[in-house]
Amino acid sequence: MRQRAAIARALAIDPDILLMDEPFGALDAFTRDKLQAQVETIWSATHKTILFVTHNVREAVALGDRVIVFAPRPGRIIRDFHIDLPRPRSLEDHHLVDKSAEILQTLRSEMEQQEQEREIGNTVH
Image (cartoon, rainbow, N blue to C red; front, side):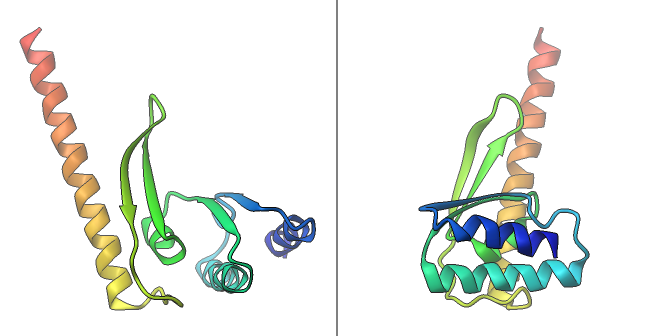
């Protein structure tokens, strides 16, 4: 209920943009799914810009039109994925699951490549 109340308070002032920093991180899976659906409903009704920070790729793909991935240090954009799946989206939809898996595989491959490049750089010195 706290998360719902926080979202309601934020929307009450009718902002141009809604900033959400891991709002569902401490929730159980059932409640998380319900709140994700509510965010989708809010967006459908208002079309407000929502900046949603999450570590959950499937959640990002379910809710976002773009998934922007940051490097940990220094904080910089390393990838920008455009999500062109139709709305409304369901977490069980195979297209959403496939897109999430594709993004995860791309990120894993890139991280492995960066790790190998660091190892090569460390052995050269």
